[in-house]
Length: 365
Image 1: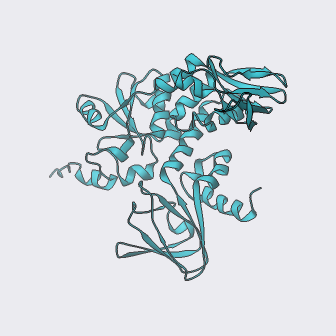
Image 2: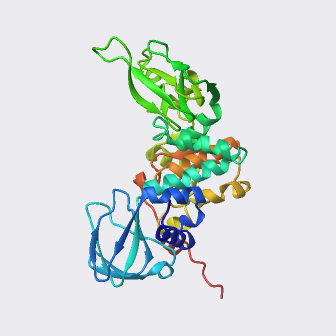
Image 3: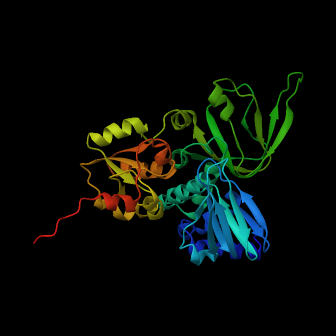
């Protein structure tokens, strides 16, 4: 159960800071698992280092100063930061925080935060399914096989899965069988048995419950089943059959292009579509890109030309993959920039720089 203090902290984040202001309650509950909260006493000093990707630092409560590269910036709660986070330097560089009163800060891994944003949009795109099915969708997302795959693959795999019910005592898979499916338990319990190198009989190796998955080893390796899984209560299973499993793993749904190729495509007529937040776009973007944040895409799609070809990008590729799936499903000719703007080796500009570079119109006399 979440503490009153944590509820207050999350409420503060979701009231003042993008992207927390747009996250669903379900994703907000996940925030505590993907960000780090640090409490500082008055006059306490903390050295903090970002990851490889310019992590975000949010001032949730209190008053502090941040020293970086010889400059000092003061912050007093979320209102004074103008709803923007402090961007930490990439490792190994550090920033020094000096608490001028009791404070709470939030250190957010940028890539993990991007994944939360993208997953929220995947769930929104599945509005045609009820709450029980949403719970099953979450089980698929969190299963080991799909955890590192693009989010659009997770959503597609879920729609291909069948429901299978088994009775207590029934073997779901057996040692020596061909691997023909991958299973996720959405209700019930089971036990896994394997035959060790020096064993004559199968030995119990694991208890399985809701959210646990099995059956992928034989599918990936092409070998026979190496375990028997037996239901210990009536079970309801999500089942992805071998052909679909192979498609999900081996044939990505979204077309991606390397930055070097993308640059050539832009020079031959492709338009760039930036699906990040306006604040990110303002800081830096690829010249000539159109801003259309992912959360606005469904309502603004009619602003795009179906006769035009698009390259979609975000920060690292997660949000652009979702946007590319949405646009492709709506008959747009679209690809996703591999690695996002983070891997773009060419010039980027801020809105301020781009405005200053626009040709000035001479006054008529």
